Image 1 (spheres, one colour):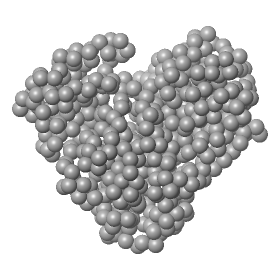
Image 2: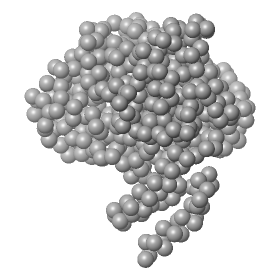
Image 3: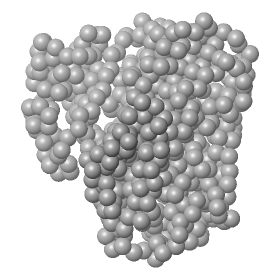
Image 4: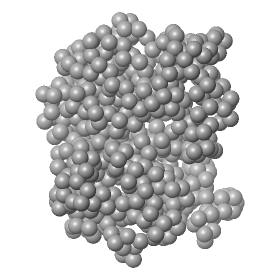
Length: 578
């Protein structure tokens, strides 16, 4: 009886009733997950019942999304049911197809799409998949209905990771991919990623058109490509889609291009299987990577290959499902207790496009690992070429490139910004734990990062922390950090507030950790990056995926990072954002 009373009270608190629009399902789910964590599985039935209501909202919601559809740095993200519904996902799919319907009369689109005609796009088709988020399969059903209704081939992977779907575009010769994922966003989010024929995040010239056209279709409530009177079924129930093994396509691409990037997939895995002195622990945080890890290691059955959080849980047990230091603790503790000499630990986000590492002693974010990957490919594997990293990323890679006599490409945040140097840069990576390499996909991919880490440790016979220390001893140490703060301002109001940071220009002194630091350089290609005389820097920019302002810092001393973080917060407080 006590449990029933608590549930009734929570339903009232969260306004759960016949009107989906005012029902706060995910606040309720979070409360129930908290109770499940404290008191056990007796709360699971209540959680399942709420998700039944969410599914009804996904299917039946006829209202426009509560926030306007907008493709940011990595697709469109919004609330499950409230923003992403069968209706809205169908219209967004139709907006994408409108690009291909226009290519015959607007040939300038061909260069961005990677197809020359509508007929070519239909025949090459779409690679389709989703991560472990609630509703992924029914969203995929809505996408499939629109695609097949318009005569497009559908290559269906089911639950899959972003990097694998990107590889499938290349290996299957598809015209584009759709991945229903919000990446690392919290449990209440769903998302929609679209990649064109190059298999990388779509160019702004495409996403801006998708955004505007989707908003038009949703407002109008109609499209010749969308038939909302038809019942939506899972793609697995259809006879007109092409099913394929996503990970097999990924392996095929890596093997085929080993002469380009120098990673010998089968040899790397074979060495792991034969070496009793190395252990690998992978935390999938309940995401899509959990279904691939065993196969990624070619089915090696060994107690030295450990999977954590490898069960399906759309609530992520209440945590933020991202490769963070907090979430890394279980992997770190596990490896610290292992007897093996060599230890590779990794945490991967739900759609498998972000990864962070540990060796049980040292945590290694992509700021460091991206530079290590560049050093490994350039100096150990023997490949020559430039490095590409976003402007918010550590300058350690810049230092390596300077010493190697190579270029550094440093664009704004967003993996699609690397398009100009795909095939030229040995490594391209961003501060938010995303990486890819030459000869692989132009999309960030946790699996290629994991393969790189395993090769580094086995080839050098050295743990990742020791490898990093050796690089820092030779090239200098860098100490990056980042954070984000929620803000109520959006759009033009937010940009107007951030414009007040222009007062922090070259020559201005800023109090950092109790000491005045003078700004030596300002980079304003994506937010505002202020570089000080001592080489330390801080950067502030609006998030492209969440209602947040993000800030990034880097010190040249271990103790200097905290002062930079505080300086960034002080700036945001001064302009009224916190």
